[in-house]
Image (cartoon, rainbow, N blue to C red; front, side, top):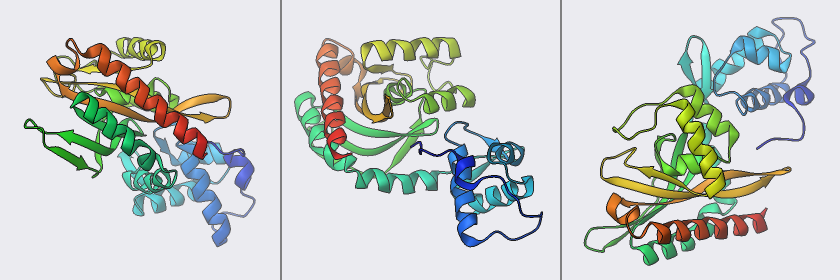
Length: 273
C-alpha cells in the first residue's frame, strides 16, 4: 500500500551527529520508512536505503539488521535484504481484517461446486504467491477446506501471472529474481514472460499449462482494488486440476467461471474499503 507521504517526508534527513541514539518514536518512523523502500525495489542494501531516506548509512545498517532479527526482513547475500515472510504473514492479518477471505470463501465454494475442481485464493508475496484459502475436491468427490498458508513461485503459476500482470511491483520482483524451470513447459525467457503478461492484461485471465507440475494446469483471474488512479491486483482466484479437465473442452467454462468469481470478489472488496 502506498502512503500519501514519501519516506523522506515522514522522517526527513537525519540531523543528529553520528552515534547519537534516536528516540523511540523516531526509530519506529525510520523502521516504517525502511520497509516502505521495499515497495519499489525487491532487494536493498544499507547504502541504497540511506540514500533513499536521507539517513546515515550506519543508521540504515542498524535498522536493516534489527528488522532482519525480527523476521520482517531476510538477508539475501552481499549485504542486501528483502522482505521476510513474517512481514507478509502479519500483512495477511490485515488482509483478513479487510474480509478478503470472508468475501472470497462463498465465491470459492460456488466455483468448486460448479466445476468440481479445486478453487484457490492467493495473494502476492514479493515474487511469490501465498495461497491463503483452498477448497479441494478429491478423486472420489470428497470436499476439503484447506486454509493453511502455502507459498509458491509466482512465475510458474496462473495466479502469479494474473497478479503480476496488474501488480507492477510483483512483476518487477519476478523479473529481477529470475526464472527457475520446474517442468519442460515452464516459461523461463523474460521476453516471453513479458509477452504473456501483456496477453493476460488483454484477456483478463492467466493460464499455467503444466508449468509447475506435470499433468496439472490452472486458470486464474485477478482480484482488483483501486490504488489511487489505477486498479492493482491484490489477490487472484484460480482453479487447478488435471490438464485435460481444466484446459480441455471445458476451458471456456472454466475461464468464464474464474473471471466472474474474481470480478465478484473485486466488487465486494471495493464496497468494504
